[in-house]
Image 1 (tube, rainbow, N blue to C red):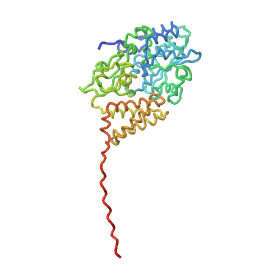
Image 2: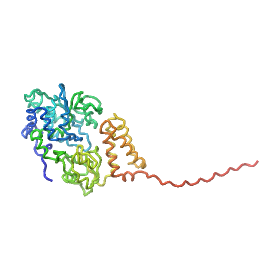
Image 3: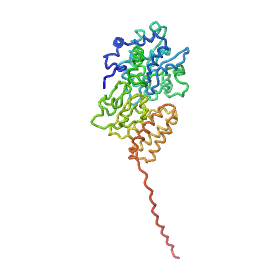
Length: 437
C-alpha cells in the first residue's frame, strides 16, 4: 500500500511537533490566522465544503453541526470530547500527547466560527498525565497571543480550559459530558433541546471529538478541495484506525477512508502465528461484530459502506479475533463492560444489561438452557431503540451479532431440551393386610 499523508499523526513525520516552536515552523496556527481574516460564517462554510464528518463515532457532518448554533448574544461554548472511553480506542491520546497544538488550534477555529469565548477540553480521569501536556501547549499559545483577550487584535476573546472527569464511560456521551463539566452527575440529558441550542450551562454549545477538530487547521490552511482529495466523496479525508487484538503490529494507523479491511490488516502486519481470522469488531465493543468473510474483508472502510454489511465504523477501533476465540466468551466480556458502565438512569439499559450479564454468565458456565439463548435475544431486541442514550443499544450489538453469526457456539454450551418420552407407569400400591379379628 502506498504511503499516506499524515494530517493528524504528524508526530510520525515531524520530530517534536508537540513543541510550540516546531509546530509553528511547520505551519502551526496558520489555519487560525487565516480564519481570523474571514467572517465566522465563511469559516463554517469552508468546513461544510470539506464534508469533514465527526470522528468520534456518529460521523455527523461537522460544518452542519457548527451551523446549528443560533446567532444570539451571550455566552457560547466549545466542548472537546477527549474522554476516549470506547474499548480498543487510543487514537485521541496520541494526538493529545504528541501533537496537542493542532487540537488547540482546531478548537479555537471552531470557537471563532460560532463566536464562543470559552473552550473546555474534557479528558477522562486517567489522562491526568496527558492533561499536563495539553495545559503546557495552551500556555504556550496564550503567550503568543493565540488565545486570551483581543486575539491578534481582532476584538475576539477566548480562553481554553482542561477539565478532567473521573473515568466514567458514560461521560463520553455528549450530554453526560456537559453535566460532568457542570459538576453534576454524569448522566445523559433528554433531548430536545439539543446542545447546539441549550448545552453547557444551558447556552449554545458545539461538542466535537479530538480527531475531528485536529483536522480543522489543515482544512483552513489548504482548503476544502485539498481535504476532499483524500478518502471518498461521502467520507473524505483520512482516518486513524486503532488496531488491536490478534494483529502482528498493534497501534494507530492513519489511512485514507475507503481502504478495505483486507488492506488495513495487511498494513498492520496481518494475523500472527499463521492463524485464521475469525471475527472483527469494527468499532470497539459498540458496533456489531462481523465475521471475517471475503465480503467483509473487501468492504470499504467508510461510514456508509460499513452499514451495508450490518455494522458501523464508529471511532474505527478495530479489534481482531482469530480462530481460537469462542464468540460467546467475547460477547460476554463486552456485555460485562457495558453493564458495569451503565449509568442506571433509564430502566431498559439498567435492567437489560443486568439480566444480559446474568444469563451470559450462566450460558458460559454451562448452567443454562436453550431457552436462555432465546431470552438474551429477546432482551436485546426489547432494549434496542428504547434507551435514553446509545449505551443501551451498544450493549446489545455483541449479543445480537454473535447470535446471528455464531449461534452454534451458544447452543454447544447450553443443555438441549430432552425429547419427550412416555412416562413409565407406576406400579399399583400393594394392598395393606387387614388384621383378622
